[in-house]
Length: 135
Image (cartoon, rainbow, N blue to C red):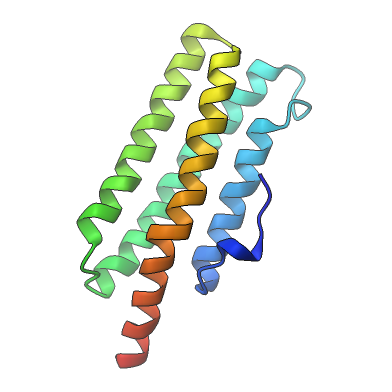
């Protein structure tokens, strides 16, 4: 999962945080990061969920500050992502390193992040930029 300019929202802080999330996800997908794959996945997923919560809190502050009209939908997406990450971590703890877990990480986490950035986050960044100019 590589960062590209395609994912840039134009908000330096948000883009920096997104780059870090991409790095963390790549860390999860990189099998050579730790002495054991189980240790790597569990540790990286924990970091990812903690970082995602911090990032989402930051985005939600921008939404509140600018009275973003799509706040409820956007926040619900964040909440659902965190719940799904917790479910994946819990499933991993029960099942261990399985093909199914790896497919879930790839299919859910990678797809969700890319789609969320390209849709919801870009909309928020454009709204926030116009709001900042007007205020």
